[in-house]
Image (cartoon, rainbow, N blue to C red):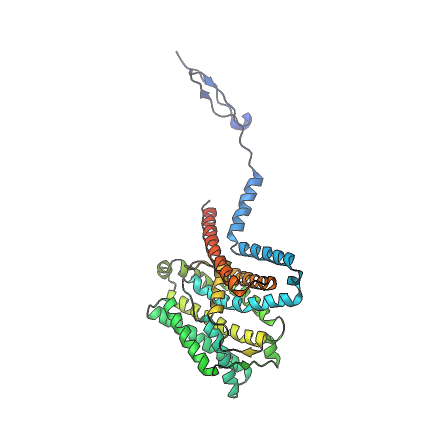
Length: 364
């Protein structure tokens, strides 16, 4: 017995008719299945979600906004102009140090001596000025000393193959001793007169403006230049970067120099602006840990390969908002330190999860 089949129809004219199929009895049947309509809204939502995941800074920005709303609701004095100035002052130094520290962390390294560089460099500036060197040149000499400190850290780390943690821990104690020697363990007044001092921090918002400007510039360098691309590649896969022709040792040494120079500049700006004096015990480990915490909270990976300077800026702002808000509410400094530690742990967990989601979004 011969089988018969229904002639196939042109798909275009049949409006989606599929080829002939046979039922269980062997009889040819024709089935028509409508093509699924694209769900445009769902596609746009997925695209928007992927874009959000790529914004490392978004989570910390949301937390900062939420904290501001909470503290303002708790106490209306939080939004006063004087209190906003306090927040800006607290965030500025940590943000500037963090802007340099991000490059080191992205490379998979760290500078524990940044806080001591912060304390030493202003005294180098004043010593040069005391010897008759013009103030502008004194500032440049002091920043050059900061760069040399970074160069020393980088050379020891790369040529002697000592971990940066050990290298900069030794430098930390060395610089602290030098600072106490140079200063005789006494603060000294910072110059306030002249246009240069106004630019460097004597005016009300100058240090915060410096912090914003430096963070924006370094974010552009990290994300839009070959220097930044080499830094990220070195931290992500040092062997692969070397095989690709990147001079990874030079990249890391350069990052050490940037971190120390920024720490020294922050020391000058902060002394001129905040206390109008240079304190040999200023900065120190507290500032260094605040800067590293700002980096981690902002989305920079401690193991290297990824980071964001703008995220570090908002991380510093988050810590400033927390500390100021707790002060207004009468919560003591010890409690703040505990909460800061919890915030760092949560930030590391959150950043790890977001990194996995970003990888999934890229693969999808």
